[in-house]
Length: 300
Image (cartoon, rainbow, N blue to C red; front, side):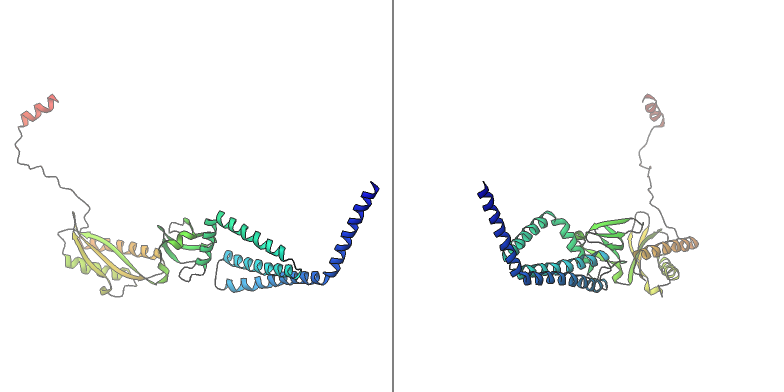
């Protein structure tokens, strides 16, 4: 029993002695590896700050700036870690680490495919010059002002002050209309007048009214006027003119102004804006005996 304990104790001492000798032999490499890790840590901090400032000049979204800054930190630290492992001659551990990281990355990527797709789309949207915070856009059936571009979603504020959250992937995959990219916007408005109206007078009055109501319309020639059809109750026409604006709300305001001005002008000149009517014709040519008709009603 004592011999077994002594043998085990000797083996332990030999192991400790071998480890001590290996530590002393590899002490320069260990010191160098630790120095590399420390250098990578401080380099990652300074690199992260520099990249953050550089990205912030081009991307207003703080979330995107933080993401790129953190990715830079991870890349620099991982590079320092791999270099330190190579200095310690731990190639097997390095290969195992790379293999495990690759498998883990594949599993995570498959599990979070939708979330990663939205994140990548958010980064792409943040660097697009034709979509910026404050722009008035229309996409996926919604229209409003872009208030935020996050990593996972796109937030717009509609004219009624409601906010719509749209996945970034959906924005990239569907058409998008950006009203802010051009400073001219065409306003189209339809109306109708009675059949008794003087159409030439209606056209001239309409153009004059639009010119006086909208400051951006400099002359009557800037107003396009077209009669469209003989409607059921009126002769219908449309007017078109341009305004200088980067927001769709100005288009609604222009319509509102012109509608009120046209109503006042037409009322002043006695021009009728008919509403839909229906005429019932009872003169069918049939002769009805009032006495027989009364008897039929009484029996029923």
